[in-house]
Image (cartoon, rainbow, N blue to C red; front, side, top):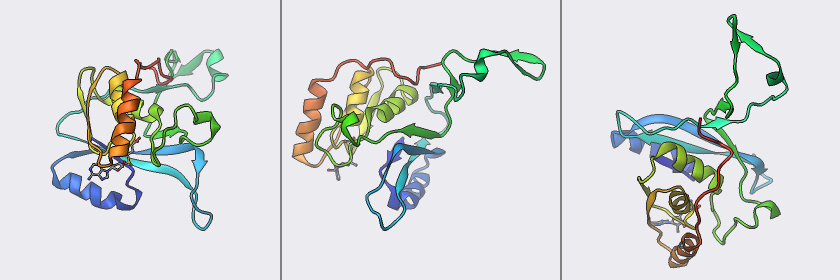
Length: 190
Ligand SMILES: C[S@@+](CC[C@H](N)C(=O)[O-])C[C@H]1O[C@@H](n2cnc3c(N)ncnc32)[C@H](O)[C@@H]1O
C-alpha cells in the first residue's frame, strides 16, 4: 500500500496503518526534481513523503535500477576487496529518495490534464511496475484524474478506481480510453 498527498496528516495516517496491523516498509521521499513552491512566505516545497506499508509478512518488489551517477569512473576497471567489480548494465539499485519532476511548465504540457494534483506517470509507473505483478488488481481509492489507473492499464494490471467528483470521473475515463501499452521506462528492471 502506498499513501501520498498527505504532508500535513502523515503522522495520523501512519498511526492508523499500524493500528490496522499493516507492516511499515519505508517512507519514500519523492524529491521534486524541478523544485516547487506555492508560497514565498515559507519554505519551498521540494519533496512529498510516500508511505509504503504492506500486509505482513511479504511484499512484491522488483528491483529498481537507475543510471550510475558517474559514467566516467566506469570506463576503467574498478577493484573492490581485491576483485574486479563489474557494473550492472542497467545501473545501480535505487534507494528511497526518488527524483521525479512535478508536471509543471511547458515540458509536461502533453501529459497534463485539468486536475490540480495530478501525479506524474513516471512516479506511478514505478510503483505499479516494481511493487505489483502483471494481472494484479490495483486499487485506487482517490483516483482524481486517474493517473494510477492509467499506470495499471498500460502496464498490464487491472484497476479499480473511486472518485467523488463526476467531472474527474469523466476525465479519468477519457484518459483510460486513450491509454496504450507503456513504453520502456528509464528505470529498467534488473
Ligand atoms: C490528490 S487527488 C488524486 C490525484 C491523482 N493521484 C491523480 O494523479 O490525478 C485526490 C482525489 O480524491 C477525490 N476524493 C476526495 N474525497 C473522496 C472520497 N471520499 N471518495 C472518493 N474520492 C474522493 C478528490 O476529488 C480528488 O480528485
